[in-house]
Length: 235
Ligand SMILES: [Zn+2]
Image (tube, rainbow, N blue to C red; front, side, top):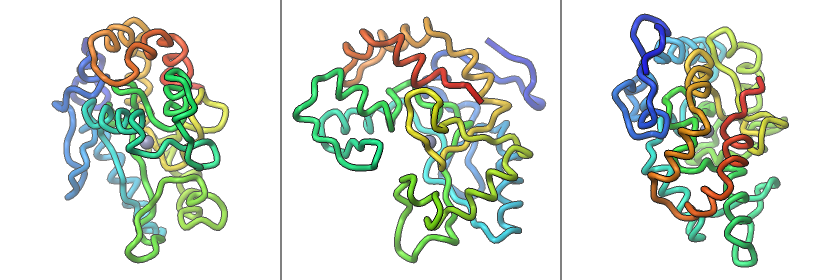
């Protein structure tokens, strides 16, 4: 379906778009390989420029992510090829867990394939390049963004200023079942609309039509997954 103008172009929202299988509405951010929604580009550019004036060199670790790349992350976690962390960023030993326990352990940090806000191009993971220690990469763990972490100052600045550019943090403590992700920003004028359009029935249809590990368990728990990990629009 088409919704009204976000800015000046119509935005098509269908199941393929919402689940990361369509890139028609996306564009590269600046001179990077990151894809973002074209209706967010100007606001994101303005936010990064305003941060730069204050000495923060914002960069992204991810923006748009396709269904296939989310599926790869997901399957590697299920197979134990990629770490699954608990709320203290420690490794969880999956060998003692049931399939449903594994499903919910992964969901605390990673979205189910097709259920990530990164599929929309309206959501990004960011850090401050100027605060990085040379030759290191951001780990995307809460400690980096907290007091005494390298990205604490830019996090404070963003908290004060990002709303003016349309951005907010959807993953705060108390919002659904996902642990707080201070690095994850969302462009509210778009993501609010996308989330509203993404009905439970669409999610179920998507699960039935898709292929990934623990699919059967995901279908059995679809209502809980949808309400705790996708429909988390409390702020
Ligand atoms: Zn993210």
